[in-house]
Image 1 (tube, rainbow, N blue to C red):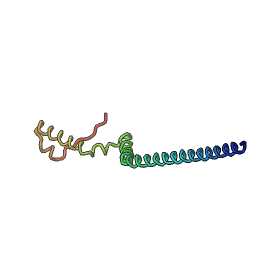
Image 2: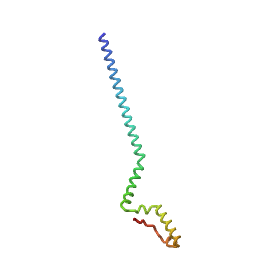
Image 3: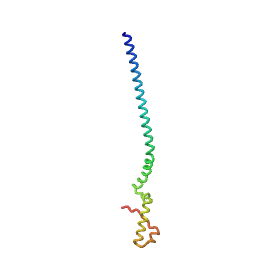
Length: 112
């Protein structure tokens, strides 16, 4: 009877050992899959943000130039040129010197 009880305990212990190993393996596989999914999400997000990162890096050079006093990119912009042309035309109509505006009266950035 003792021997039978000891065999049952041994068999039960082996089953528990196998169940623990199986549970540990399942947990490890789930953790690996979670890590893999996180890596995929990171790569996808980095790819989606890449155009914005590039645009920011490109704009940084322009901002540094403006900060150091180089206003050429500002004065060359289409909206600035349009405003200058309108201002020249308005000044010409007010002063009656339309020909002066046609000869290339240009806006200039004046720092204060």
